[in-house]
Image (cartoon, rainbow, N blue to C red; front, top):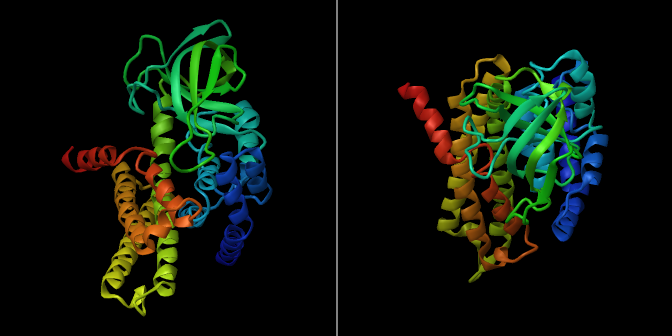
Length: 375
């Protein structure tokens, strides 16, 4: 996409965020639901296939340019941002391992938005990595799955679960595999989890699989490729995307705080004329810009095929810490009125807390970064 067309796309998205998405966000907050009608609205505008290759029906937007788009969508509603994030990344981990028939059956419909799939890795009693406990065994033309998955975003409406498990009797990365599990697979029980503090409407689900049966042709790649695809193909770019989400959300909080500081008058003087508030604004602006540059650098490395996990983790770790500081100062500038439901800054404050966990905690990022330097 050339620069002129890309700028037109950004202008279009900004207008959409400040127009129709404002009303859509209010409706999501009121109903507690972000259903397929929201996905369809975004699909019709061509926002769900921005990064996928043109040969598969996408728009081939470079990753670094996509980061500018996710920063914008992060300034709308948390659930809307998650839709953009999931749709523009979920195809990435299994594209290198699927066969041609699976490209036609799964990848192209997923990119087109004809089917909705969600990343299914996290378990109640495991870390999101090589200690997954959900097991699989082959019986004839089917795979039999036993285990649990939870906190699965949009599990309430997904058509398929891109599920990661391991062959019975294996440990570590050995034997891990990726399966496309249909929503109505025999033996799969889907339970909705309680509403989250923020990102209303994301529809998290708890999956219980008891001898759940999936056709063998739904295996993506080979046993042993599951976690490699999940972590290397998806996790690092996703961490950078989440980091840039923090930048976008912080930018929105900052803009609201600046407006509030200019409008609010106490003791005959606008808040913006008070030195302490000016100090807050300066710190917030510098913090946001530093995080943005970390994300952009990681994005360019991803485009060049030179990204190392530590760079993605640095962007994620710093951006989340930045978001904590900025949203806290923004709410402080608003004062008590910002703490009331219905206030946008209140929603942002709640939505921001989710980023601490998404794609790995700060503690996880520190481990990745330390290992890079210490060996």
